[in-house]
Length: 198
Image (cartoon, rainbow, N blue to C red; front, side, top):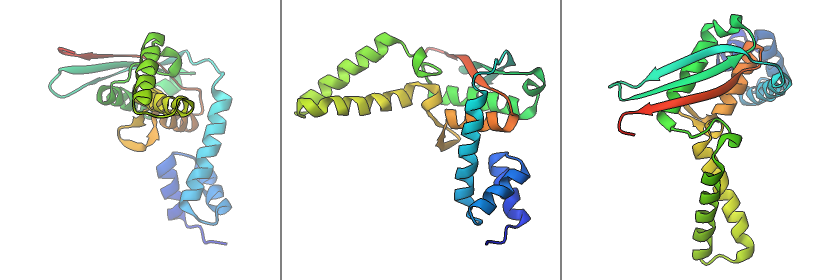
């Protein structure tokens, strides 16, 4: 049995925002292995977030980000269940970080359902033509196209984009962590990105 120190628990708490007791329990479960404890907490966070996903999120904030030089700006609506959570620093910081990410990564939709169907059809057509031109056999062209379509979604769908401040996480991972921290359903509702001459 590994000796779990207060410093280890604090480091895990700082990294995840999860309560001290849950961090200690995860470290005990994984015999003091920090990375495994992180995975345990992530899985629990995802399970908790899934349970909260059906709850109404009618409160929230509209956050903004204006890039230095004032030629690029973003407004994003992020919802939660209560005005209490909407007024916390952690929730506002999450919304601000999402706005900054949108400025940097220029997604076209929050999730796959919002991606313009014509845009997807056009992309599929281009991808299929490229795969066929490369001389690949017809039976594997569909697999290639599907793989490239997933990459397309990871570029244009906000929730699937790698987070600019931590590319090991997607925006969906960041959202799940936030749901876990605040204890409420949180949803990125919509955004608008404005760029001079864009």
